[in-house]
Length: 246
Image 1: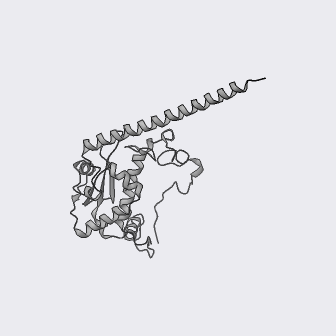
Image 2: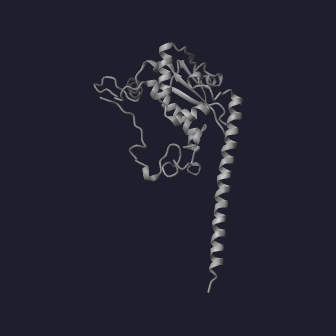
Image 3: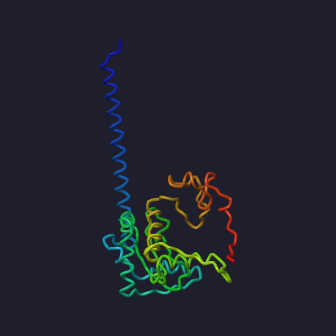
């Protein structure tokens, strides 16, 4: 007959072991959080980011590093000065960002700036792309300050079509949201994505983000940055013929 005392002692030892393992895991996670927090603080100081500043206080001159990106691409955007109305539009756009975005931007966003003569709508660029903890700058084309989201979307999407001599037109109904609200939310989401590593990092070669580099969010959906897995492939969507409205 088996000794019941020995059985319960063995069970107790197993429970103690499991509790020790759980405690070690919790401790390791806390250490990792503390290490990451310390790294963020060092990086913020290195690149002049004050996490106690409000996001609107970070609106200002476009950093030289961002202007260099445009110059290297043959572009020459010019600085834009916000008037009181423009400032209020930007304050409103910042205020409606979700709590997660607000929290991440507080730690990772170095600057927001607006320029003219910018060919695209906005750019989110990494301040220190080769570091483990990245900070970001957001640059926005000032022209959208006077557009609703619907106006901006119609303008942007219409550029995909040849509408000459066509009776067709595009229309967007997205409610009362302004273009700056829509665009700032979009760009802020890039920062959240990169900071939380929701999708794989895309550097100079997007096609290099292969399945083995996938995150849990992308692993079963994408083969690389441009190709869905077989489950989600649609031959009709993988081609992009020129569309002419007539």
